[in-house]
Length: 312
Ligand SMILES: CC(C)(COP(=O)(O)OP(=O)(O)OC[C@H]1O[C@@H](n2cnc3c(N)ncnc32)[C@H](O)[C@@H]1OP(=O)(O)O)[C@@H](O)C(=O)NCCC(=O)NCCS
Image (tube, rainbow, N blue to C red; front, top):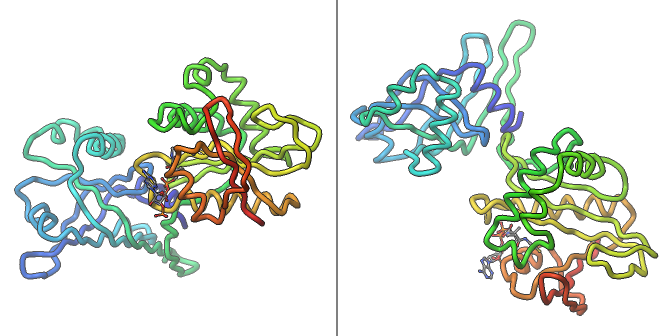
């Protein structure tokens, strides 16, 4: 089971027991309604004056069990907090999706939203006919996109083009991408999901797309994505993006590793990319993934870039 399975389990059971640590370190448990965000965080509400909230403010470590009556259970250990700002909005929206009947109580100043970020989880299935338990894989999943995910691919692309680094990261403008018809994104997703010419890889946490990288195969005799003639067929990574809130957590390493694996499977022995000379963060992440400057420098539509390559 992965985070997406955790989300499904929580949403289909919707209640459980949360255990926090009391003033003397003793466990204190409470039975609560429990929802899940698309990212696989657990969301609950509680009275601001409750002992649970007092406990979490003192020590955020919690254990939660979701479900059980039907023979399937999810045990979770994690860190709880009381989110604020946009994070509170996101968590409250997930909670109210599950429990619209609590809308009035959530707007009460005496009620707070609790979020639990799982650090470990185990799913058990003890229904008649079998008995099994499996640790939940909480890592970000990296996989190729599916053709029917064109809207998710479009939304991530549009978010990337509004990033503050977009001017030194992407050749396309937000306005240009936003004006493209649905058919453009449908056919791009179909081409990126299958075949040997292009593969869009996506990093997914639960059900949330947190980043993407695309490998283009440039055939000898064609023109590359910058419009330059291609002398020798090669694989190139483009469209590299990780959402700001997910940076520094390893998604880029997994995306580049998957890009390298796919390119190797296509028979290439080298993976290349172009990066703006001023994009120091991207360059550092590429170096960490084994890319080194090839010595080729060029000026494209976003300004001066260097080429970096990684042997496969
Ligand atoms: C480029 C990108 C995908 C990298 O992913 P990330 O999760 O941010 O990368 P990480 O945080 O894992 O690694 C960044 C590296 O840059 C370093 N770094 C962070 N900020 C930096 C800065 N301002 N200047 C220089 N280096 C910086 C980090 O220390 C880290 O290097 P280290 O592993 O040697 O310590 C992401 O930042 C992004 O989407 N940026 C906007 C779009 C973009 O620039 N795409 C690339 C187009 S070529």
